[in-house]
Image (tube, rainbow, N blue to C red; front, side, top):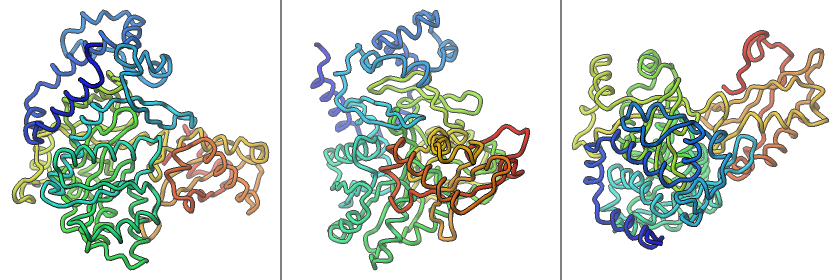
Length: 499
């Protein structure tokens, strides 16, 4: 085969090593993203058997897609209408699963796994996003850095992907040393205590609530976090700027805009966008200004705000939800992931802040480090379908099964509302309000039975929940309310399962 694994690896790796981040981002901001996405479409249409068949079923001749307007007329692909209908091999270029060298796993809507093959070149493309954070935010080119991967290690995408990307940065002559305790809190604290002083800074990479738990536990054990110059890389959760401030104060942040960053990542396609110093600065300005937030984002709650490279991951919107296209082990064209959110052009964002708010974010920055004219994408998440807790996607179906068990089903209607609340110390609490059947009254025994049933089914059905969420925080807080409760179960109103 002409395009061997070795050739693909060397080409991608050499390009990564030889191209500076500055050059890469300059190309990203000057390349025509519409022309780029058309080229990707035609390449996928010519080489991926599943997509060829998908287009044929929709009576689409790939040669007729000549403009960006034509591209926007293409049907959306989803897990249901595309990924689940074809074999893994058919979804890969050339119909060859062996074109990939790694398979990650994510939980589906009912806890069934979804497999995501990828090759080294896919990881190297995502490594650019980690490079932005480590170089421009953390200045890791000139500082000995210990990177502690606190994402779960296993078949799940977060831990292994992060570890790979950090090692590629080390190969590019960044003085980064990697260690992978995963979400083992005791091991993380031992690693930091014994190795942290050997480095100029320590980067903890993990899900926000878990990192906070690690930090709080370490504080209780008299770990002096500020002595390690802690930086945080996070993913999987929307958190408040109050949360960032609180956690930053406990580890000794000197500047939250440069000492932390969150990734917008998915198992489907790796990292789609990242928090930058600029996006964090903007988000911190908007925090506590719900009316301004509503004018900008359409809702008064503050979403995750990131910038993205449109030549790597191309975003569109449809009815308030996000679509993206990108090259991966399984290339995706106009993929409807289901996240609620939107896109804001770079100049549009700055014009809004200056015109509507009298705020110029560049007044905050001195040397402008890490500032690039990349577009913004904001994400509320799939709030009507899933709940994110310690990075685990908890689905409505997971909870429903717990209420459908023989010992439970006669007491309840099957309707419930789930969410994550914060206690006074800003620690996350997983709570579920369950509607009792007509004429059934609350009792402590019923509450205990419902709690045990839901937890049991979550652990059985959802591997992310079982492995991401600390054992001591896996028990949900259950409230049983009468049928028709006006706050959570109003009669005659379409029910929302997730708040």
